Amino acid sequence: MKVMKKVIVLYVLIFGFQLQAQFNALTYDFSGHAMVLNTNPGARTEYQSVFGIPAMSNFRFFAGNSGFSAYDLLAPDTSFNTKLEQILENLDNTDNLLINYRQDLINVVWADLDGNLYQAGMYWELDYFNNFPADLLRLAYDGNASHLYEVYDMKYLAAKAEFVQTMYFGIQKNISRELKLGYRFKLYSGLANAQSTGNGGTYYTTDGTHNYYTHHLDDINVDVKTSGYSENGDRNYYLNKFLLSGNLGWGADLGFTYHPNEKTYFTASLLDLGFIYYSKDIQTYSLRGNYQYEGVPMEFPDEGTQDYWQILKDDFEANVYEEDGDDAYVSFRPLTLYASVKFGTDNLRKVSCEDFVNPKTTYDNFVGFTGFAQLRPVKMHLGISAFYEKKWNKHLYTKFNLTADNYSYYSLGAGAVLNLGRLQVFMMVDNLAGLSDLAKSKKQAIQFGFNWIKF
Amino acid sequence: MKQIINLFAVILLLLSCTSELDTEQIEHFDFQPVFDVDILYFDLNNNNLTDQNGLFRQVVRDTVDLDIFDDGNIRDAFVKAEIKVYYQNTFYRQFDTNFYFVDEDNHPVDTGNFIIEAADPSHSEVTGEVVFVYDKDSNPAFVNFRKIIVEVTVTPDDLPVEDATLHVQSKGTFYTNITVE
Picture (cartoon, each protein chain N blue to C red):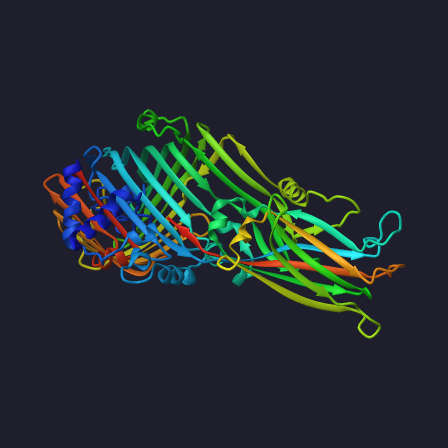
């Protein structure tokens, strides 16, 4: 039974969730890694060409929940309400759930005689994000009686789910011996999207003028937008949208590597500076308005009565209105910034003259720091990582890091790149300690892939 | 491709563990939110106590439709209601006040009655508060009400009516039990 539970959790992590290595610290600037250019088009590489095995060159899985773990919610032998109340008590308005999956379908890298690199490929990506509006959740669970004068902000209502296919072409140029610049153009195809972001307005209660309370809805501004949703749930509907769904967008990745001396490397990259214009199969829902409620005002007319309830409802609908529509909309990609500095720690070594792509000398061991920032609704995803990178020989590269980000105060990660002749196999795990108990882990990221490499 | 993915999953499986999780508990659970909401209010002045012919209106009555219990889910969730009524009276008159909770056919399902004391020269304003409790177990018919009839009987019934006001306000504290399945 324990093994079966482990299988369920693991398979849910890998297949049930849509996962992505949001802070891909292990792959970033890992020069022996076939996918290093994915996180920085200007990254230094230890190879001159890569041919990714189609649909198997790169799988990246990430799940992070800054609010609570699966065990916090589903531990056996404890009252569910007790656990839920504990979670709600500790939850913050900026806690969120982030799940993402990326699979590279095509990935090819090649070099010219001057050592400039070219990259082309295609990948798809499933991304899910939801913010936990802690105050609103407590309001729903407890009712308003124990939270009477609190202010509830609709900006914490934020969620987004997206299935995107990306085709790209990139160039990395050796500007000088010290500087490489990389640029990658991306063409996005949005296969499906659902989002509710950028919401606003507040609900709150004050002491009333005519009654005990005045309940307020101020500047309510809530939108829900979807694209690509097939009401009949036809699988072929989505397959037919493969390649070019009609919801197109473009973007760019930029990056550089600068090493002022043999020992020191500075890098930075900006990823997914782009957007998708959703115009197919659109459904939108909006809620707007202002309203105040103090109860029903009775007037005791001389004769008959008024339909007070209907008057109240009409007044509410006149001031807080719903709109359904099908207007096209723009969805921005999650802009991501990486930066790192690393230092060689062992003796300088000369590399083969065939290695014309790279400087003639390099180090086998590096220590350094990587920083990360990603634009997400409500709160930016931030992270910082200290790492140790070692090249054992031409066949084995390893990297270890200690990372702090929104989802964990610290997590120890490890990655290995194994070159079996020209076949490269890699595996990276962001949270080794989390493997000891997946149910109690708030974050896990796993990446693996298979590529043909030419050094 | 599937075999390769499965191989890596098995490797991770061998390297990883997970604590026992009980996923069945999320399929059915209850929670008990409590809601505090204004219900109604009114202000009576001397104009309300005389009709268009200048005759005294000893009984004033008005009705408000409240179909909140039309929804079966709300009826099922209802546990208890505490209706709190606050009044301020500057009339030198007593008001016998009734809140009739009636169904669609105006049959009473529950009532709330209270006396608003008259003000006098030594007490220019009389205030007070009363609470009515309707419990699902002891008042099972309460969820059948669809209207509230407010009826106020004024004594004494002599003219002229002084320039004064009666303010009445009310709120409800609603206790619920919501089942998620």
